[in-house]
Image 1: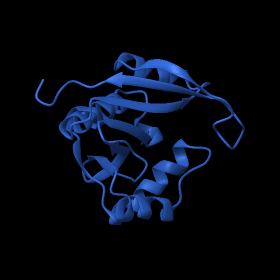
Image 2: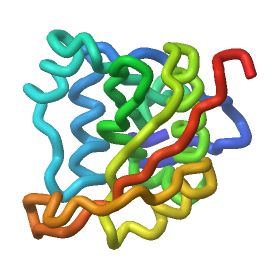
Image 3: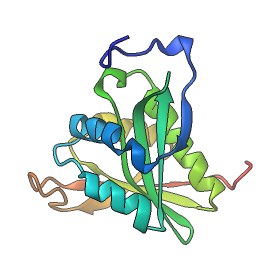
Length: 163
């Protein structure tokens, strides 16, 4: 199997685990594929080592990280910082599973709601979020510094842990 060759999803179940500093090089590959303004190695290192609100997880298939998600857990609210998959794995419900796991983790940590910002033009992500119970709660004008695009603010309620 080459690095860019996707694993056959029916053969393997994903593993979700906490992100480690050693994962950052693989995370940066995903980050550069997914975002026009990718986070830096230093940003991830700071999140993992200095931000006690930050919770990051990776999604692995056959010992390869194919996606990751992060949030800040503050009081009883989870704020999604980022969620991304390698391009080769998009459009096949893997993002669905990653978001499910992030939401389960937030609930486990005692969060009662979850929020995120998404580009106004990113219909694919918005559709996934709506499917997971997120609803629009407003707009942040000019939120994205690369092109001043607006962000849609979305919120969802989380089930109590164990429900």
